[in-house]
Length: 190
Image 1 (cartoon, rainbow, N blue to C red):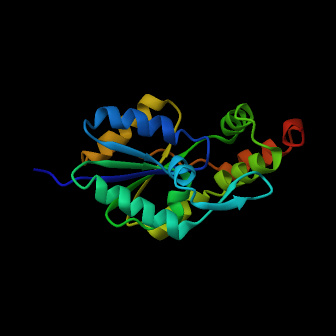
Image 2 (image 1 turned 30 degrees about the vertical axis):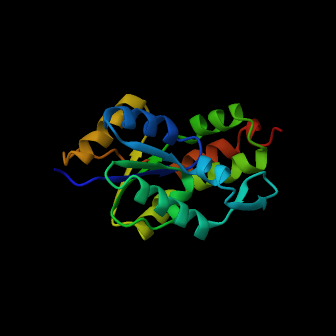
């Protein structure tokens, strides 16, 4: 019998983490998905809201809540999904950092109604690969994928979990994308 897997899906908001986690859970029969944002809300693991309406999360309390979820599901594969996971350390986790082109990300976040300040913060975080860098600091097994087509990302994640060597994507210069985006009127538009 194989050992259960702890799979972390992280990345900037809007990169497709929730969609991927849901699709992956359907492929990994019997697995459990833990959406970190829902966990924070359900257990009230925050102290208030920042100026950009983002929750101020009690990270230590969140870490304990995640540990409890892992214990509760000790015999199942657990898929943890959320942007805060890059800032945590979860022993034995395989981490997938999702990336997305900035113009696509901006459209997604606008559709979600993000305030301009929060949208800009998330775009800059993506351009500078905040989640990827933090994940590399906190975990030993980290894979970073450019999202693109969701079905392709799912195949790559499953292949990686099965130990297949996959062709790596060509690195994308997100800072050049940020420079272009900052020159457009929608960067300043309300």
